Image (tube, rainbow, N blue to C red; front, side, top):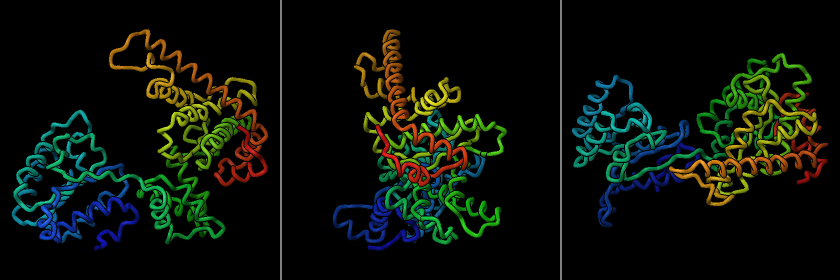
Length: 422
């Protein structure tokens, strides 16, 4: 079997699907004897930065066909004419291949503008090219922003979602981008991998490069995990500053709030903590960055535990300071969303609270009451977790106050002498 995508790291499932199409192209008689024909066109879709265009370019190179690329780089009227002209040229030079790069950006780019002239033109051109050996390869970020009539079978027989690589494939990609970088000899490569997991290829590359720039600017000869963590915080939250003018007392309060989140997250979602920072884009708010398994979202406990974690910062402030936490507005919204999922989507409190397109005011009252009951239950659970691990809470808060930023390795070290109690 030919290795058509040797320049692409990971994504074996995408490579397999595209390789099958290329094999049919190159051994058409073999497949004709089976009654098979070349699948008509392929659409790769997924979040930005996962390598869709790289796959397209490698596919085009492997096909050996005359290629044409269409991107939205002209005004609307000229662009429509350019689409038509390109398809005409491709038909004259068959066998050929056309790349429609960022197809969902050809028009207004949202689900409310699906009948734009650009999409109608592409659809018509694909149909006109059906009797010619013209293959269309398209990429898109959001497939929902394309008319269903455009990406149906017959126009695009293969639709492949390119997801952010995780597991072994994700680790392979991260190590590839780290390979030629000068890494601090005292740093564990696995720590770099854990901090960067769950991010797109483009994001990983940018974070590592910006970390190298930061290290160079500070006249250091290698990249540390702290450099990576600082760039991730900045990438997630915007510019941060430890010179924020916040008093030590208020910094300590934020440290306890974030430590409360760390305690609850560590107990309810083990091994998912990445970074906790005392400062984020907003000078009075810290941030805890985790990497939870998407499969957990199919479990009711996921939403309950999320709600508890969201309320644990508020719980820590009440326990330590004996006062209401006034800096937890975003946490309250997160907790409410989780409670709403429990009551409505999961129907954990009965079908009489399930929201439908047309509902009565009485249903809203029942639903809201159940949500508030769930929030109260989760808040009591959060306080129980914090009280049961008060000494560890103090340790984490004090070290966060001192260092301003902690990695999961710091938290693991602090809790090594404690047995977390649930």
